[in-house]
Image 1: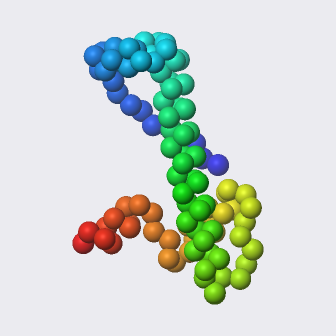
Image 2: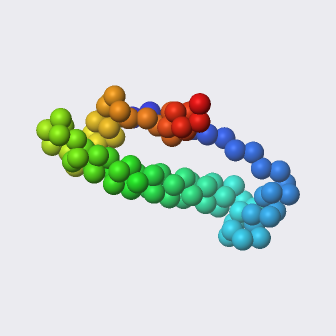
Length: 97
């Protein structure tokens, strides 16, 4: 599985503001951990929504007769390979021509 690295930029002012609320935000290790935890939380919530939405859609699809995968990687591969799957950008583009 590929790993994607993203870079963010903070001004000294922004870092100071974050350090008001975040323990060790003035130190890269503390801020890096907070950012990773924020991203992990967003991924987890997105996964929960995707799993809920697509489990129901698959169950309601009379033409889908295969078992629904129980592991995350296989489930995502199945859903994203379907012709009716659209990611957020594609859904927004379709709704706002």
